[in-house]
Length: 106
Image (cartoon, rainbow, N blue to C red):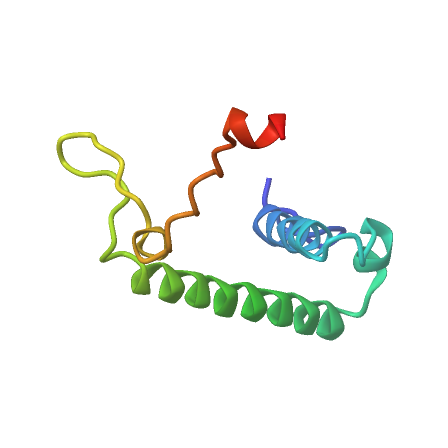
């Protein structure tokens, strides 16, 4: 049925509900469904684009941070786990003191 005079087209309806879901879900509790549904279209689009831009930028930063650490592998090709760099350069803890029994008898 292609009747749209008294309602929304199925494509627009799906787009609308997807946008409302994304704002509510990715808004982390800042929005409820009824508020977003009744929000003016321009404001809903603005809110959606701001949330979308935030997550795109966050994703870029995560990928960039992972790229810096990608040269250090924690598992070798033969399956052995290697220690991180900070542990390789760390000082070894001092050995535990030994107590002689002669000193304790005095």
